[in-house]
Image (tube, rainbow, N blue to C red; front, top):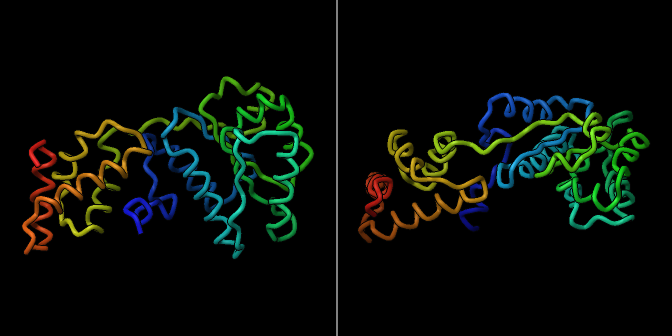
Length: 232
């Protein structure tokens, strides 16, 4: 299993957000199931798609539903995309009166290809709840936005990543302190897509420079500390 697969978020609590209010909304959709469709918008790489995936998977797990096929992408938009959503929805066996869940990434591209059709879909198919994302909310007409709970997801600051980074490094055998992780993350300038790559590089560097005969966590922590200061 790759580093990225080992540390892919398994729950919404593994996600990192700049705003605690956004984290609370994501948690509510994952565990309480608000009725209004959700739209996450913001710059690329802020974790919007991952959040929607985990909301859906959490709801499936709570309902005891096995479902792997629940996502469409605006890049594949054509006249058949709504039929595809309905077919996916019909495979989800929810209790009577509970809408199926469909994730629609890059919903602005669906609107570009089929203007106004998403609004019609929402109105006509109350048995399907959309969880959508876009990098370009201004491309969505107000009539569609008003039918969605629109939540802006901003890029986390480097220090926002510290708890998640410390959990991953600990799982990799580095008994690092919060101070060390703060020093390490101070050099991080990327987004959510870059985060795992950055940590993997630090762990690989630590293992490369660690004495071959030593597997002590303190050795790994020491070298991570050096890496945080830019001297691996």
